[in-house]
Image (cartoon, rainbow over all chains, first blue to last red; front, top):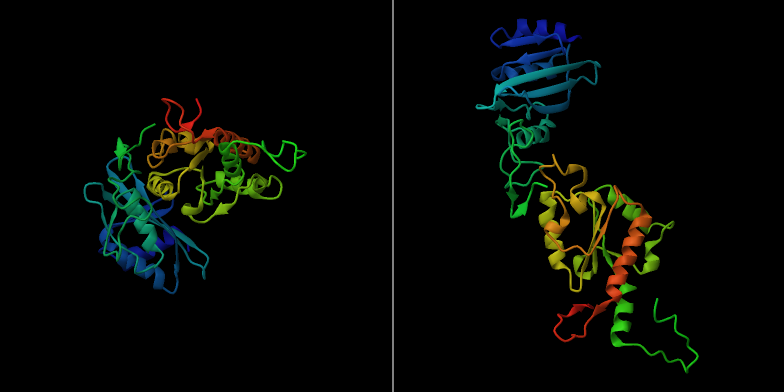
Length: 156
Length: 170
C-alpha cells in the first residue's frame, strides 16, 4: 500500500487523531496523543502488517521543534511507511512505542540521549551512548560544547 | 641490540654496566596492553600479524594492565573512554610508557572542531612518550615509533647524577 492510501485508511479509522499527509517526502505526521493507537493499528491490521520498526530517529527541526521519525517496514507485505511526530522543544514529550515494537527501546533511548525527546511510558529511559553524568543533548542545534567534562578540557 | 654486538672470544664474558643489562632486557620485552579504540587498532593488529611481526621486538599483547609496560592508545579517545584510559594507566606497574598512535589520540584528529565527545589529545589525561602521526599510521610507522620508544628505554638511567632527578640522562 502507498502512503496516501494508508493515510486515507487511518483517517477514517481515527477521526479523533490529528493526522497530516506530507507529499514532499511521503510521510504521515501524527499528533503525539495518537501515536500509540496508530502504531498498534499499523502493526496488527491484516492489510498493513508493519511488523518491523526499521529505525526511529530524533531530529531537531531548527525552529524550536523536535521530531521523532519512525521508519516502518512490513516484512510479509513488503511495503514501507514513514511516520513523524512533531513536538516543541520546551515540551518534548512523546508516548513510547517500545511496547509495540520491542526494538524501539534502544532507538528511543538514543533519541533521548542525543536530542532530548522524552518518551513517556518507556520502561528504562536512560542515556545509551553518552556517560550518565553528561549534561545537555548534543545533537540539538543550540547545543554548546562544555568547557570541561570531569576536569578534562573539551575544546581543542 | 647493544650487548650481543660484543665479541664472546674472551672466555664467555661480556662486560657491561648494570644499567645497560637492565635496560637491554626491558627494551627487548616491552609488553603491550591489548586494547584498541578505533581504526588505528586495525593497523596495530596488522603490525602484530606475520607481515610486520612486531613480536620480533619482544612485544607481547597482555590482557591485563598489571602485566603491561606499554599502553598503545590506538584510536579516538572519547571523553567517556578517557576516564577508563586514565584508570588503566594508573593500574599499570612502573616503569610504564604510553604510545599515542594516530591523529585522533594525538590531537583529536578529524574531530578537533565538532567532536563534542572527543578528547583533543590523550596527553591531556596521561603522559605520552611517543606520538605517531598518521590517520591511521601504517604498521611501519608503528614499528618506527616502537624503536623510538626502545631508544628512550635504552637511555633510561637509575643512577642519580649529581643534582639531577632519577630518570633520563641529561
